[in-house]
Image 1 (cartoon, helix red, strand yellow):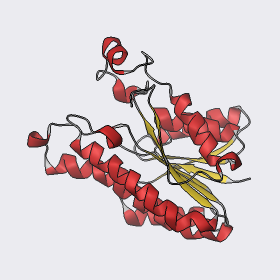
Image 2 (cartoon, rainbow, N blue to C red):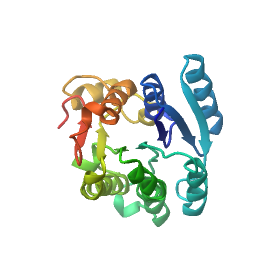
Image 3 (cartoon, rainbow, N blue to C red):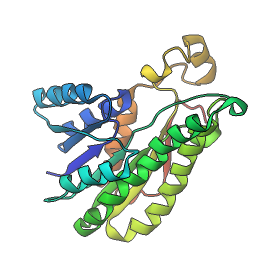
Length: 239
């Protein structure tokens, strides 16, 4: 049974991805940092549906803690599907953005990508099969007012995705990104009302977390073996 790790697995999109990968037959490690109880509850729900899952907790911005947790995880077998989903918002218009707001967002999305992916890569290479899937955002493609930090982090992940895909292509490992648009999770509550979504999204609705998870499921599968270095945006036709 192949093993998958989903960072930020206790959140809205992350939970949908965990559920889908478990349904696809992977043993899923549901990562959390501050929401360990939610991760444990999700694991219990996956197991109740006859899936295989385990919760794991560490701070992706802490390089040493991340490496220690991950090295223990791959001591006996590699993680072959990695979904880098952990991310945060800390919005402000740029003239009023603090250094703390800038660094907090980049540390989770971009620093977290390095701190989690790099320790897992060699074991994945030795297995000659792997899928690295980075969950980014439409903001990394189009930019967004009040989110220079978030857009910068996600845009950088797009570039990292393309570069890493070139390094790992000959090793049987694909690297892709999924860039959601407006998805119905707690992160959009109070940000977009129904009228705003209708005006912004050609499909006139927010996406569902499972619609993002479906794309991740495909990218993790054998059917996507010749697809790498791509940014796939799930956004209802916004771009």
